[in-house]
Length: 111
Ligand code: SF4
Image 1 (spheres, rainbow, N blue to C red):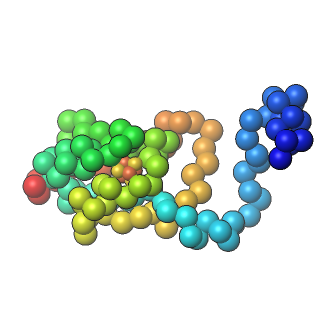
Image 2: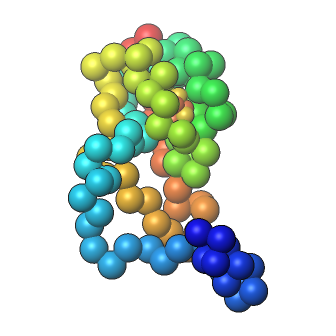
């Protein structure tokens, strides 16, 4: 561990490589949420955003925005959303742009 940290510091590498294939252990990791479009109303979206400890959820106009870069997969929003959300099937979220980690859901009329 200490040698890896020393070598990383010398080369300027701060993370490990993205895995070449599926990680079997990932099946047991908690994953960020996924919501059903149009079925979440503004009132419910505001309650979900209020319980999010990392401000990953934001209500902006008629949209609920989820920033996967901020989400810690704690599941608190899913306890509020109940049947309107579930955990994503995949925990691997790699991208070259942070903007690609923001998902917008259109809010419906439901409360
Ligand atoms: S899982 Fe937790 S951190 Fe992620 S959006 Fe929901 S409340 Fe926020």
